[in-house]
Image 1 (spheres, one colour):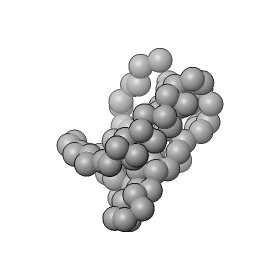
Image 2 (cartoon, rainbow, N blue to C red):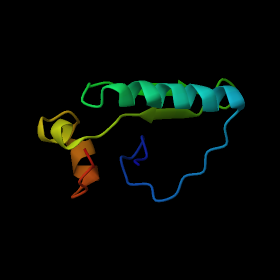
Image 3 (spheres, rainbow, N blue to C red):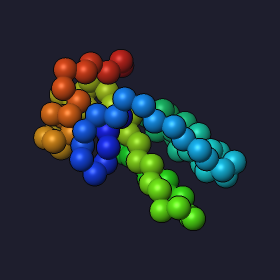
Length: 83
């Protein structure tokens, strides 16, 4: 997990979601899991707080193919995602 503004690693996150936001998050994640190698991501925006969640499924193949910016790959460090 990265802070989108600084691209620094986050160690602890607490999500407080409405039912609608939680359903949307689950739906979007399931969609990404349907084709993990697809170069897609999603953004969820909270309508009342200005909060944004952005997510992508990270795979070894996408990391090897340069599927992320240099800054993102640097922030990932030596992390090896599961396939």
